[in-house]
Length: 443
Picture 1: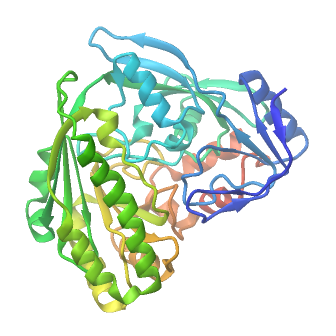
Picture 2 (picture 1 turned 45 degrees about the horizontal axis):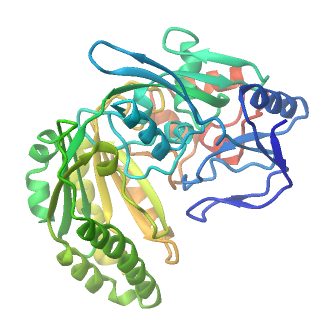
Picture 3 (picture 1 turned 60 degrees about the vertical axis):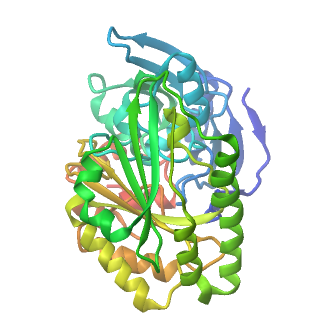
């Protein structure tokens, strides 16, 4: 039988959500997972899967069964193509860092990744996790098939050809269609990235924005509120065997001491003395130095994040970005709020996934953060009002205040997602308050 634990309080990484499930189960294989779901459904108990807890929302909260899928973490199948790419089927509980290592051992890699690799693959795709790149989509666009355990405990293989509507909701739908047990990914030959990280004046970034976004495989920048300074990141593909790693001492200084140790200390200081935030941000922005290196793609994409924060991120039409940032900057300058965390701006190609934040439009992502010990409510509410003016779509795994009626206006296929959810889970086995809020009441 699957391991079981007595009820304990679970909290997510950001400390924005907690739950006291009636039981915690860790199925060892597909059969045990199906048994657990079927029994819970028979008893009228809710079921939610939980991975690393990196969603800032209550997406994983339940008063019923908490499923930990860490044992479902192996590579099941590799189907290589003549061009070197492959279809790789993996257990849905595998964490992204482990997945990257397994793929590297096979000479393969994901096309694109976000900047955190602690999540499970199931959690990452189900919440719409993405990286950056004007010609690339989020992680869910790299999924070609799923295996999902439905509310009856039935195991269903779904793809664009077989059960296509279930596939759409299962690969990006907050676990509302069932529990993912395996995912098939379309991956590419392993590659390296040349990383160029440079501080720029914000105005120079915005003036050259199209060139920077379209002229690089992956471009993003971090803007420090209370300043007109930004850190730019340009990552471009080079031959896999080409490596020019950072000096280990420089890497430790930049990624651990400055980005985590000193940054964490300065956030604690400004939480005690918020009025010094603008000066601290000016110093931090000017202390950044340029660096350039080449490393395997997962090592460039992922960065350690040890300073706890709260985050809200909106996807907006790319052409509205400059105006949106101007409005955020104006609000910060006049509000009296103190924001020590930078804003992160990334980009994505349009896609056709029902619930993708980039559905149907070239997209810019604006992520706002606040140190977890400082108030975020007024700042996030102001940014959300600005995003509403351009039909912004919130990241499904990050903080927001929207509900189903607004999502129906923002997503052309939202009614289809609601219909499929009602059909595959008519009794709400996989519901929780967050799922009910964003999908609305059942028919």
